Amino acid sequence: MNIYRIMLANALVLIILGIYGYISSGSATALIAPAIGVILAALAFPVKNENKTAAHIAVGLTLISAIMFFVIGFKRDNMIVVVMAILTTLALFMYIMDFKRRKQEREGAN
Image 1 (tube, rainbow, N blue to C red):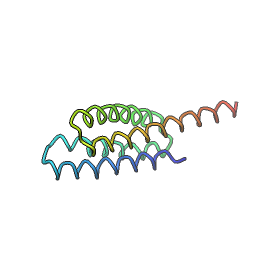
Image 2: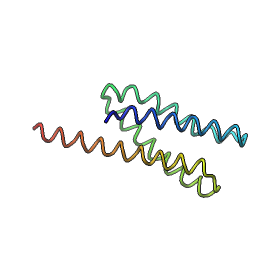
Image 3: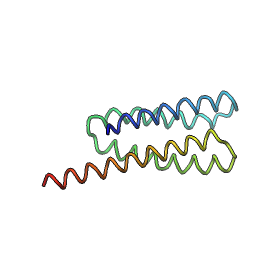
Image 4: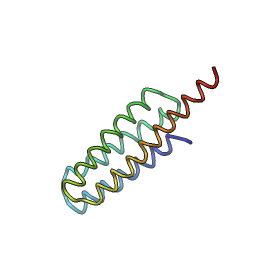
């Protein structure tokens, strides 16, 4: 599993849905999701090169984003934000599964 591809896909979804939300609502706070998407996209390239620090930063940012999207999505009854929350949570679980797989591989190699 290439985790950087999942990271790029999640970033693309956040950028597209965030821009759509900004166009449809005109609210500047809708640009938070695209900003997070740009940061995740920038972190995907160091993650591709096995940079553990970038991977951990990306996972932390994804966790905070998922929580934020769920709270805001349900509070404002906004389905676009809830969709971003669900997809971001799915990406988070894939990151965690990849971390577990890599740890098992390292332990098996010893």
